[in-house]
Picture 1: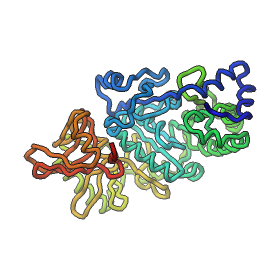
Picture 2: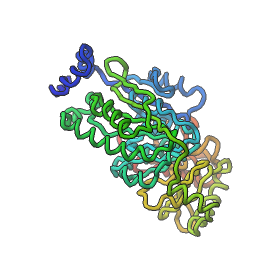
Picture 3: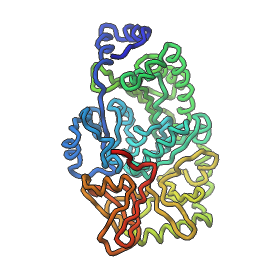
Picture 4: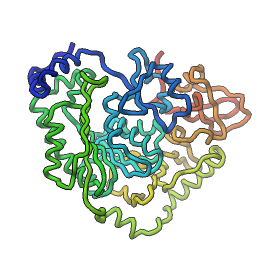
Length: 453
């Protein structure tokens, strides 16, 4: 039983009237659990397989979203390590469904950690366009980058910036924006007892003020004709309707297209608020990034370090990945780490655009450069289309070799060959191994390895 603050109960009784007692009683009901299948990795029949495995039932507002049974443990399954699905509270799936980004869109997720909405946006982009996914807090930004990697997303740049300096860099730049603002977390009470302890009317007021500041930076980054989804996991009007009303009053070029609320006493979910706004006006004004792109004309040739690194990578790919082609983009070298910065049609974002940004992941991590050789990255393994690798050890998902690989153990192989080999479960890549003399040295990242039973 959750002990709710009396001032919160009073707030909701004033807001919901006769429905308030049903709403308050919902906090003593079991939590809902959900996952969202990753269409970048899903194949025919996978939904049926996962339904049988985890007892899935559809989430009505998200075509890839499903509730799973309380007894299921999808986070411990090898399919999770392979990025086949993202575990996400079902209500939270509603915001991206309403924003509805399309392949080719230039999208910003402004407060993105841990990555549920960003990975959902990337799934809708289908590898086309550009996603800049941002988180101001360092530890949460690292988790965000890890989730982008696990889901096999190649066209995302992960940044760690405050809203105002980000807005200064990207005026009138994005087609779609997600602002999942930090909030008082009234929809988190069943999940997080600390959220109950932190809640107070003053905390609500503070959150609403912070959301107002974030949104004022956000609106300047949206192109005319672009859409912005503002979402919270809280229920009070101060952080929701009144904040949206303030934006509409301050910025008359915006119009409110739709508001959706998910209530835990009406729907199977913890609750969510989403407002979809559209920015009116004519053609987007010139902005510094676009001006730089036009002035540059053709892209300058890569500096020598990138050229040398890409020679090594292409030599590796010719031998180990004969079926793999890089999407449009350019090489970026961060120290010894080689990345492939995505290029989106009609978008001036390029290597020079990274200057002055705190970037955790400038696109797809290809490899680590080690003197005259390269070591392919874990992110590359998870982003590869099926059939790309020359050598693959593909085991049934319940084979003992899969558990051994995820624990970091050496595997054996009857392959009379040597070189980099992709380890897969039911065709889903898990990571790399290095084959030599019938032994496969494990290259699964140490920080991800399973421990214990």
